[in-house]
Length: 342
Image 1 (cartoon, helix red, strand yellow):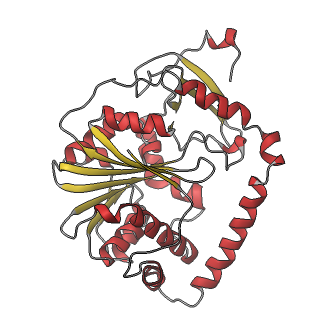
Image 2: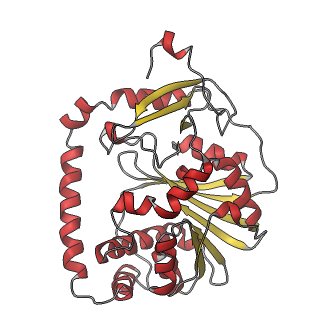
Image 3: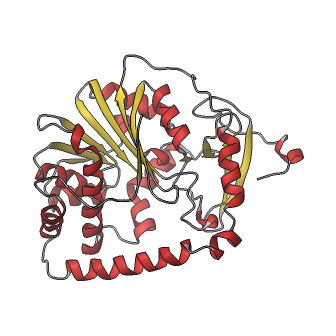
């Protein structure tokens, strides 16, 4: 963050997507790879974004053809990725299973390889998906045989068609999240629900220098995520925060009208910047967190390799995860995440 003299001279290309303010502080001028990327935080509400904002057409092209290969190094998921995604899909299902009815229509936006859609359909729910990556959506259709379209949510005009819409690690990639949420609200039936999962601006699990990268246009903390949903015409029902201020998951319900610019987050900027100042590289690597993270990742990688080597098909892997994780009595191990009803 800049000093007081420098901060007074900061200007942003686009106003805050949440409160429309142009008063910002610069958090970083580099991304996790050391490339130029200016990241700013709104001094009025605490929303964080890349400024200048990337060109929307270039962003669409990036997610359609390059993102997955740059992020994973492959165009089609390996068996270990399918196993990992299936475990994650069941975790996500567990968070909303009490909200799901058999007759509900669910749309998963940013469906990727379609594993979440596959799991829900295997469990008897009417789920479909949409995602920008041509290879992954084709994999979902041709390998998993589930309905995942290739495209962007902003292009959909299905008014009041869905009971539930899910956005798992998608909202942070969007160039205008407020507009996207309002579009999604129009897709939902009366009292429909929206599930959003995003990285947390207050995350202390990762290395501080890896905090920002070009794929994440916006970064939220619990307060800005809830406020953005409420301004777009939703009421927050519950939220979950993973350990170490990790990923935020929130469930919203559609309400009758939007609350335009109704946020009051005057202390949120100070809260976030205080956490970020304290979470230095020095303190991070003196703590047990980075070493525990390495150990957890190594153990998980070995478990994944053992788990998938006996299977020939990807659907066998997912079916086995479903059978082992979803019990008739509806019990699973506690994830350790903090869940709050709102």
